[in-house]
Image 1: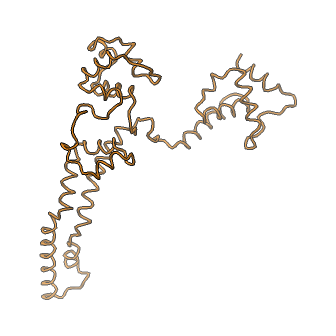
Image 2: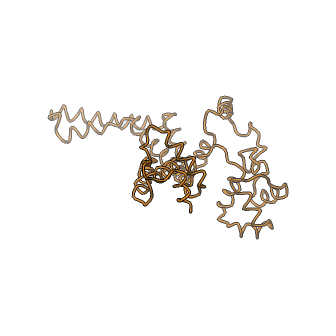
Image 3: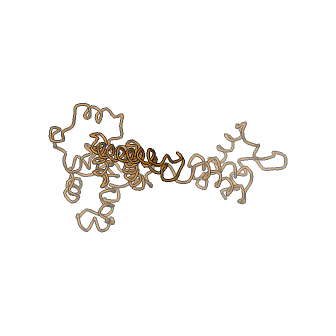
Length: 279
């Protein structure tokens, strides 16, 4: 997930949160659809002060947030004293060693309050006395059964009394784990389509599938190897010029890991094949 959003990402996120199209946003703000589209584009270069002020007012956020100067949408001037943060926590957040945005998403999740309550119960040993009382009661019953009936240690009901003994760390540990995993699963799902999120399908599997598709398609061995090489680097093979194709083949010929893409005897040169390919 992203650690810090760019200006286009912030603008697009705010619009998507409100489920608005560019046309609808243009109608409600008075800004042109073309300009709004440019502000959200990957090749974004500049945005006018008027547009920043208009969008900040419309979305109810600070202009500093839209410009990427702060991660706070609505509270840019909040004093640290009001947050009740310790010096150690402030130093940690300023250090850059933790993902502050992920930390904020965890804390802002609807299940975080439940997690905090359960952690407080564990840390302050609020449930310990009740668990100890239950364990003491079960131990007393088990001892009384033993003294009166001397059952086999593996007898069903006697063994049940023994297994009813509660281990506080295991019991509350499972609860805390469930609380945290529920939060993290929601956050992971929310960022499933982020560009920095690992693909659901393994890269190796996707690449192998592409190789199989290329090898099964029509074309010379030369063209197939060039297409696979371009795919591995994210290059659009079909947009190569004849000159670029020839250069690529000449580079591939220097590789010791690839088979010779063609037999020179009785075949046209790479340059000729490249020209034929793009006719």
